[in-house]
Image 1 (cartoon, rainbow, N blue to C red):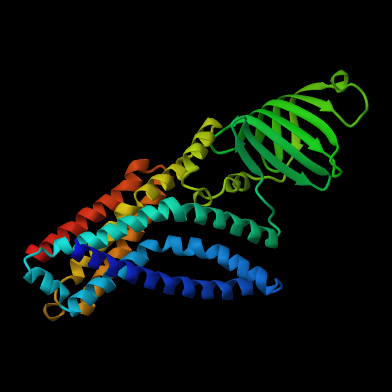
Image 2: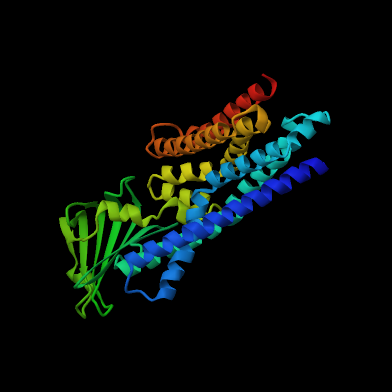
Length: 363
């Protein structure tokens, strides 16, 4: 156990060192980019934006940091002949991987249980701040157990829209209610409709009933029933979908309830389900990257071309990382099942790395 703790501790410190370098480097790059995008903002506001974006940028490249840390560890152990001593003592070289793999698994578990909620909160706040400075406003959509709520605005006031459910592409609302308000906040009219279809710059309502709330009389006595009714709108289908927010903006702990609400409202939650499963598979993928690094760099420095070995390990690790992202895209588009998109790349990476390692160690 002392040997396992020794390797685990060395890998942990190597990982923290490389992660610290990336945090500082990416933060400095982000500062330059934000200063170019917002030259009129005070410096402290720019620093706030950068600090909010730092967790997300580093969380995305966490697998790459792990592969670099693993390569650095095993190259150093090979050059100091510590792995030779381990094998000479009668222990298997594979046994020396238990400590680093345990640390990689722990990093993955901590990242999805602790870092993920922090990244979700900071990323959402970052998006809202940037959108506010760019004049994009805040989200126009909210999901609840009662259905979905939309908000649209214009020079003549605001309109709040409620629907019990919607089509998967958000082009049709069912059992919709439109309540229009003046710029002062006074109610102007209320409209109910069996369906509301989003067209080019308008909602087309069918089986609509209109109440005029701007007059001081009984609104029911002047209500009108119309087979079709057009309501102007500046909303687009893409803007409504974007208002859901990226999966990265939602904590892993809240994702199951959010997915259930989306499906209950009639929306497709496939993108969020894929992200949820991929986050659960993250510890296994990090362990696979440690095996990849070990497969190419565990041999003694005198018996291998260290430069070529390091390059091969890093290139294979990067390739597996981008294959994982490609599988995510296929899963989100419905080309492959969700579980296959999330778990096939980590499992395949683990088995591939383990096979290469066995071949390198035992021939």
